Amino acid sequence: MTLWLLAGQIDPADIRSIAATVQQVSSFQILGAVVLSALSFWAVGRYDVVAHRHFQTGVEAKSARNSGIAAVALAQTLGFGLLTGALVRWRMLPGLTMPMALRLSAFVCLSFLGALAFLLAVACLALPAPSGAALPAMTVLAAALLFLWVLFRSPVLRFGRMTFALPTLPAVAGIVLWAALDTVAAAGAFYLLLPNDGLGFGAFFPLFLIALGAALLSGAPGGVGPFELSLLALLPHVPAPDLLATILLYRAVYYALPAILALALCAFPQPRPFNRTQWRAPREADLQAAPRSEVGVIRQNGGALLQVAEATLATWPAGQTRVGLFDPLSGSVTPLLPALRQAARKENRLACLYKITARTAISARLAHWHVLRFAQEAVLSPMDFDLNIPSRRGLRRKLRQAEKSGITTCRATRLPLAAMTEIDAAWQEERGGARAGTMGCFCPDYIAAQNVFLAYRADDLLGFVSFHVSRQEWCLDLMRSTLNAPDGTMHVLVQQAIRAAAEARVPRLSLAAVPEVPALQRGLLGRIWRVLTKRHNAAGLRQFKASFAPRWQPLYAAAPSRTALWLSLLDIARAVHRPSLPANTHNEDEYNEVAPIIAS
Image (cartoon, rainbow, N blue to C red; front, side, top):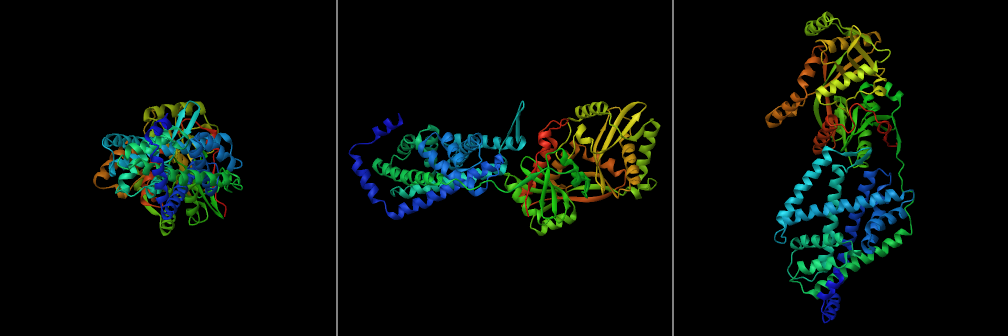
């Protein structure tokens, strides 16, 4: 139908004019169009790099880029883009399954259409555009902002037993960046071939995007018909023979030539495209030897170890961020910083260090990472713990109240799981769910690897606390109590743990961290920060830990840029307060996920 309509726009007498216009195009114009087309296809290949990182195929960037260029060059010329592109990717990447090739092809197609809509909306608002385009453009931008919020808020969608990982914000930014370069270069190639009639590139670019969108949505091979009709309608002041001559040259340069080169490229599959990245989950020996026992949280949050030579770092994949948790388990953080950035880049994520001490923060700053103090950790020395000092007067009062209430405590040798599960469920219902990510959630398999202390009154379990354990430290993790537990129940449980740690000659016991961000103490941000901390009872938690008169140790976060740092902290906060998994479950598949170990 569109070809018939297009034929109706061409006067047979214009065919000679089209040929004459083609002959007038200089070799310089053609060479410039070829160069810009090559730049456009280079950007096109980057879509596949983003897609392979999203699906974690392990394909190296160069192989992904080459297969993407060939797939798009053939698909846009032959049509049936989804299937054609998948067949080319499957052919060029040995070891890639056809279902994965189809997923990659669909990801590239859908993400480019979304990026094209966004770029067209921006172009229509920022550049001269057809009348009536402003309102649709603003609608598209509003939808884009909503979409970004959904990506940040819910990075994993769940439908029954099925899960779908949405693209990360860095992946979306990459797609938009490469789409902008792709479309500007493609439009530039067309513009170079267009006879000079005074039309500026700024005015031409939105029109080209509209015609390109019509061609893509039509599904016709090469968009033949809709592309031409759109340009004829949008550029009425350009003589039809001149415009059609430009389109013919453009199709030769941007469609035919790349398709021929892509066919030649398909004859040479990419050699062993999968990289050497190895994967493994943390071993129990790693966690037991860790200087920070809190690293045990990666038993539950899908974390794994990143290793360079003798240096090892626990990492956790949050929605948008690959988070390096705590100080390195071994070695210096300096060689781990570029490895963490590389690992994050391979997942379309940001890189961030979280809950690091001042020593590691200094090393990160020397490597030009941005550092922020955001918390304080309450630290005790169990063997030197003296209950009878003035600063622990309030703690002694709480312990007396608990003793008068008839509370007894013990270290668990066998966990009363049924009663503990009931307490945890009631606790979550009262407080709107449990935290996750950097904090543990109640789970029998998870808590079995910890030291657990129980509080009873007669035969009734009133509450429990659990501690991460390594040879160098114990760290407070879970705190659960019944709604009618007497005042002081948690205090007496932690005091029991301190005595047990002293008997075991553990040099350090951590009551974990409380938030404190000096940068958010003033102005509007300070007021927002106080509202948020009050909502999550940060003041009450700090008061509880302060009753033990601990030594307060500052903790820091670090990232390669200031923007990445704040986005990472927001992402971590979302993952902690809005976990992807229900707080009372333990997903063995996610526990067994591993992160890359970058070989030295």
